[in-house]
Amino acid sequence: MNPAGVESRPSPIAGDGLFTLRAFTPGERIVPYTGRRLNQPPDPGRPGAPTYTLEIQPGCWVDGDDPTNPARPANHSCQPNAELAYDPATDVAWLTARLPLAAGTEITFDYGFTVAESLFHPCRCGAPDCVGRIVAAPLRGAFRRHRRFSRPRD
Image 1: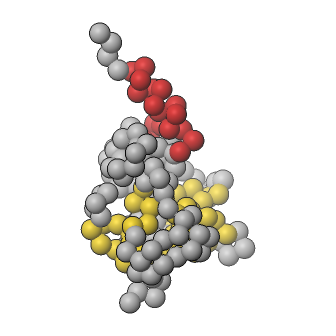
Image 2: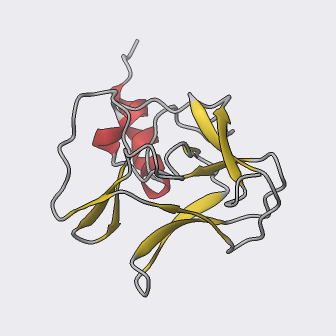
């Protein structure tokens, strides 16, 4: 058994996902989000490329593209069951359970993309309120309005 209580395996959302091997309670740390630290915004790369870089605090990003990052396979969901929480005391960002998670549950979190970033990243989470793009929860209303007003008219 994985000591962290998680494993990577094929996901119905996209590619590989991160799944629990045991139950987690709300607020419980699941795995750290690790990688090289950056002090400037990362190069956005090419559209559609996998994105693993997260801003964990203002002016500090973690490039989680390293295959040893245990949180790397966690997928985005519009109804996430985990969140990224930065602990300044230890200088570590953790995937933390938002809800009770049973063994075998796919761990998901909100990637927090801007509306502009979301245009290059389709969402396949299947949540009832999914807008079809990976976009931060506070921006989904604006994204819905954008889509409504950008549709061709009769």
